[in-house]
Image (cartoon, rainbow, N blue to C red):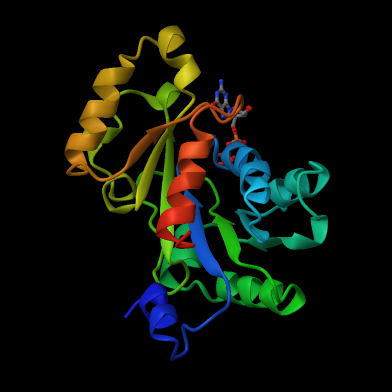
Length: 216
Ligand SMILES: Nc1nc2c(ncn2[C@@H]2O[C@H](COP(=O)(O)OP(=O)(O)OP(=O)(O)O)[C@@H](O)[C@H]2O)c(=O)[nH]1
């Protein structure tokens, strides 16, 4: 039974107040930019929100979000992942679970906690002990062959986001084809194109979170 099933059953150690959503993906694909774009959209829908960031040896992403003015800085927690970001989101997610629990204790009304993983490769996946649902963010500039490589992140996530769609003409990427290949390797499970810097596609991502995770 994963966390979501525990929560629906209202029992067991996975029981918690807030839904937990992971946001992973390769270095620089736009995970933080997506969170920055999602925060105002989710706030406008009345979602009580907090964020946990994972960086290798700094707190850079957390500091960026705290300075952004988009969210109460107290609602952003930083985990330092060390050399292997996989460990803290998959093999031993204890530090992240504790960071989420601590945010829930400080903000009892919190409904949704976003966990941004440290930038990593196409193999990063989240433990279902940590998150109820997770998004994998790749980007157009990383190459239109990424979906065809069938990395575990691309295949297993609940939602695949292909970010930086605005860059497609500049890097020679056939966007409709990349989208089609991504849908094919995912057996038609969700794929959304975004431009996180300008906000394109971000309401679609928020719609999926509202529906699949918050049941509204
Ligand atoms: N053109 C364009 N640039 C983007 C987009 N999204 C993010 N960027 C830029 O891409 C760079 C990396 O974005 P981040 O949000 O820091 O990426 P990240 O995945 O959080 O990076 P790490 O935490 O280092 O793994 C920044 O310079 C962003 O401004 C987009 O949709 N279009």
